[in-house]
Image (cartoon, rainbow, N blue to C red):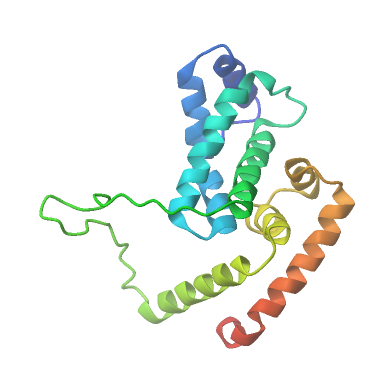
Amino acid sequence: MNPSPALEPDLVERARQGDARSFDRLVQEHYVLAYNTAYRMLGNPDQADDATVEAFARAYRSLERFRGESSFSTWLYRIVTNVCLDYLRGPTQYTTSLDEGTGEDGTLSREVPDESQNPPLTALQHRRQGTVHDALQHLSSEHRAVLVLYDLNGFSYEEVGSILGIPVGTVKSRLNRARHALKEELAPHLELFE
């Protein structure tokens, strides 16, 4: 999914020199994970989309300041996380296009995946995901960030520390406290996870 580690620095360097296609490739390679990170942190698809676009815009504007001391992805996810934290600190604004997702006849035109193979299991999975998502929204932004980056996105302790600008020891202790807080949030819903 992501460009090979050998190819990414080349794409970054070409993008720094003004090659828009190289930056577009970086966006394509990282968009899904960046959006998922923003969605899990913000809990709102419209805000997550806005935050992802803002993060890529900031990355593009700041590309000349990227020193390569970390990987491009670590640098990018630090930007995504900071944008999300800005959203969480500031006043929230929801903007939705009235025309979004509508066809010519005014009906909603969204694709729905065929989940008819095992509807009860699919319903349970959706309910579990929704419950975890709701529980994440009740955590502090610091706990949510470390859980999303480490447990959900699979970054290492070192990468999470670099993204959040905190020492590895702080990542570990914050992750422990975040997991405990999440467990407490999920306690009333344990029957879903048995």
